[in-house]
Image (cartoon, rainbow, N blue to C red; front, side, top):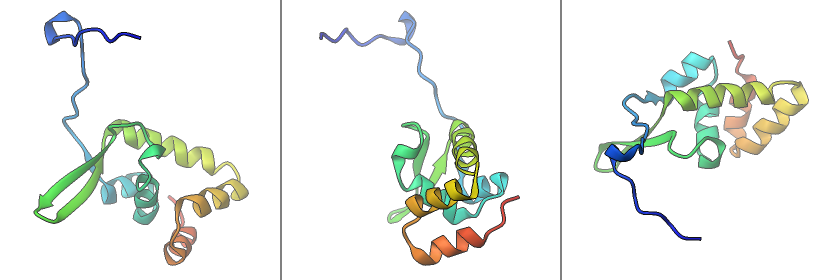
Length: 112
């Protein structure tokens, strides 16, 4: 397999540019979910499309995670798909959240 030459902007190659991201606490409130659940889902980058999870530096040793609008849609779908039954939801939570204390907090959270 040969690779073609890199295209230039003038030759029809388009790339989406992210100009707006959402912090996790805000995303959790938008979705009516516990912030720890959102954080646990995003801790595995394979749960969402590549490029939709962004690390934001707020200082030399300070980092926060933000996501794109498309990632919010993906999260909404992922959560809805796994909430189809109590058994599926329990299985999903057990496979996403590894800390027992956090797991109990999220399980006791009532989604809006």
